[in-house]
Amino acid sequence: AGWLGRYLDHALPDEKSPTRNVAVVPRQFPLILTGQKHPGVGMDTPDSFAYTGQRSENELALYRKLSELPTARPLEDLQFITRTAINANAASERVRELAGRYSTPAQYPDTQFGQSVRTIAALINGGLDGRAYYAAQGIAVFGGYDTHADQKGRLDALLGELNQTVSAFYEDLARCGNDQRVLTFTYAEFGRRVRENYSGGTDHGMAQPMFLFGPGVKPGVHGTQASLTDLDDNGNLKMVIDFRRVYAAILENWLHTPSEVVLGEKFPQLEVIA
Image (cartoon, rainbow, N blue to C red):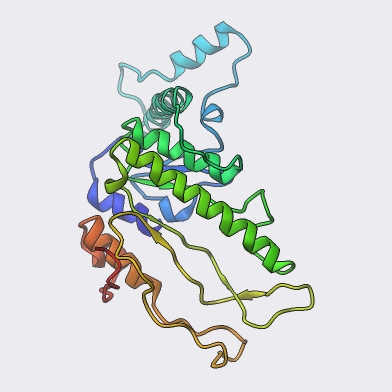
């Protein structure tokens, strides 16, 4: 389980709603959001989050009948599968209803990432009970942040998309009075090295920046600039701040949950929450 999934398991141990953690992304459900009690729901688009296997009304009726809980006590595995199907059906109808009727003046980029975040805004502003949402940038457009080549051009495009998307997101949330309730942060699996390679890019590295957005964030730059000359033996920037300090601050000061329970040990909080 990921740390936000563990947070949900701790904060909502008896909650059965499948839409507490939602990922709008065209790939596997992210580990960061996965909990043991809260597996979450993931979708490429709201329209794709639906059962589409039927070829006739009779097949659809049979599927619905199979998805009803039996009156007799079933085997535990069968009950789990049936309950999962019922939860998925209910969640898909609610998600498609909220996203399908959503209208907003906010101008999101017409990209996979921009439209994923627009869907998340629709779910939040529509009153879905989600606690944690996920969208991924750079999967299909601009080649992503894995900039082994043409780093400057790709970074300009990616950061421009990020800026436009986050700006539209908070404008959209504020329009419905939800901006004060939402904290957004970025993370990635790896950073970049300092030295430029022969393709006008940089190769995989260790340290990386994190961005936090929202009215609840303490503005400014936290930490000191990593040295460009004092590198490790592999040419990586040396990490200045342990990212778990950021997670601890979010858990303690935003989600009001003991961070040690989720992270496994106590980390000093970075002062990033206002």
